[in-house]
Figure 1: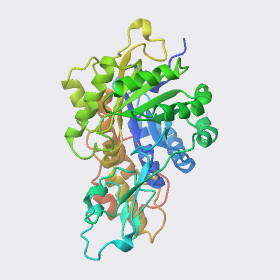
Figure 2 (figure 1 turned 120 degrees about the horizontal axis):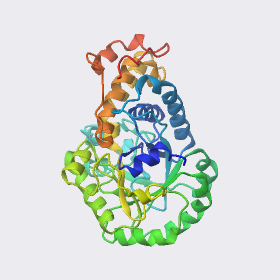
Figure 3 (figure 1 turned 45 degrees about the horizontal axis):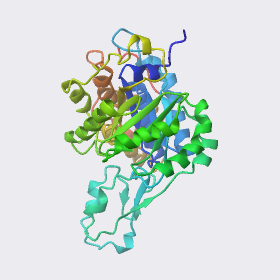
Figure 4 (figure 1 turned 60 degrees about the vertical axis):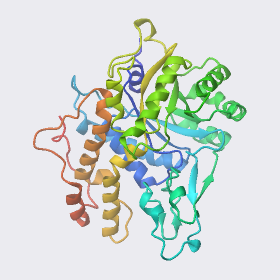
Length: 406
């Protein structure tokens, strides 16, 4: 019998780790670095905007990860082999906070404004001349803090027909974002996507927590009918909030429990507020699964999807990006120190790459039931030391890294 691909195995074992780059996030240098670091840290899936440029950046990062993987993964009972993460694109059936950008006219801003919007933005997307569209991922934290309420959301929708023809043949999975009450809009979106399912490995449905959400997901399950590929229900507890504080993870945990108790068949994956406390809370709450053990019974192991709801894993978005914010900032600093040249690829700076993967593994490993294994005496150099050598680190091939991981 052919063994299932590692990402599907991770789902069946409750070890699935998905990196959410963001359905609206289009800052290509950052996306490339995030994809590379988390791929080498053991991520199973990378969720991105339905944008050809973003897809190209992630594919380039994964090509580098494939090449460098032997330097970072030494197979052992404590550390699995490297596997290339699946790439997922996100689509929406209507207005959705994940599919929006902030915008304002800076000409209306008073000269003495303290600019609380700039201070609160987690993506550093607000500049003197307005919102940097590629950096904004629509979290909405700037809307209420503007003293004059000048900042407004600009919603957008993807074209399912265009995406299906151009992007779906190049990716492994698709995620459909919906909300309670969007049944008719979802049905129209579904008709555009359904003919392409046989070319995909996975389908995910993301729906925020709301009254009637479980019943609504049952309606969608019946609408979609038998599926040829595995299905994930993304329990989006408190969208785009994981970097705010530890308590944001509780909403996702509660929602996930609701789906496990009464939801339709499929894998349940937590999202929306997930952070470094999530895996710990899963253990403390003594869920129906034990992290690292399979939720499948022996007779179900050969099925592509479970016959009842089963915990599959966790997706991390804003918190995963925050973890690597120092790395992204260092790459920007290097570019500025090099007289405005483009940001160097992360792999061209071995010390910074190593530090980034080390940090990323700190988030991935607890969910995988592992701990990062680093050789004694090889802790990453402080990131500021990398910045201090910035002018000399912009060129040349990456140096050997295998002596740092065991």
